[in-house]
Image (cartoon, rainbow, N blue to C red):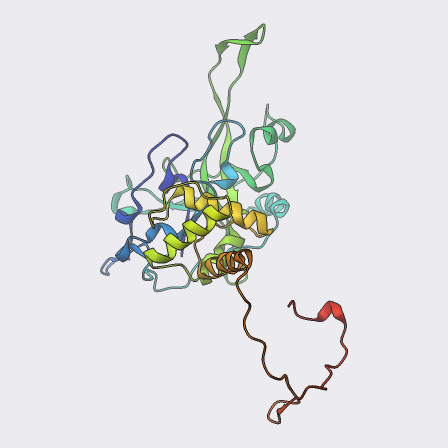
Length: 331
């Protein structure tokens, strides 16, 4: 599993995203051969189904989508021999105290550094308000300010997607992903019209807190992703029947299908992932069968009761033991 900034893959609103099929992740430890892997599903043009992102069309003007600027990628094969970096469960408000104790730092690789040397920035300050910009005003510029981390970590340019870290009981833990720089500019208006823009000033660097993407990471790690084109075709047709998909029924997982899955997940009251999974297709198929009035499965001739290892077949007059209705499984 790889976590990075969403715009590293999908760019920002209006820009052309990367072609995921050609994306490769490589690790080359010193003195060892490089290990690389493409995204899972690339062998049958299904790589897009193994990527989850907060947003595929990132807004960089207020309300800024910084809290949605994350992407999670499942690789076809692991490239790290060591353990993965765990995601911290520290609440967002705790990060300010941790930074005050000089426990927050950032690491990143830069292509312009010789031999891909690891850059290290510490200690980092995480704050809500900065000189000339208080949190009340800043928060209005972000679509989801609760998951935005404003910090002073700086390892150099082009460090988007690098982790913000703390040292936990078992080693480094990820508290956020660095995504960019927050700028503020003042304008002069007359009669509601902007007549002059002053030079933008840097307020702080921005990161998306781990709490924004941790739930989706847990889902993607164990998700049973649809692999056959026929299943994607069925998913498109069923979501169209539900009124969520208005794209072409072509068996290709793209932004419109991703948005349709999210819309259906919202209608179910579930967390949005956009993932095309086997359980999702089954839920849609069951709803479609119910809508068409398809007969339900035949009822069993009897109900098995008794303890494990001594089951007996029940007969017509058997009654189930009374239980608290709130604990009965759904029918």
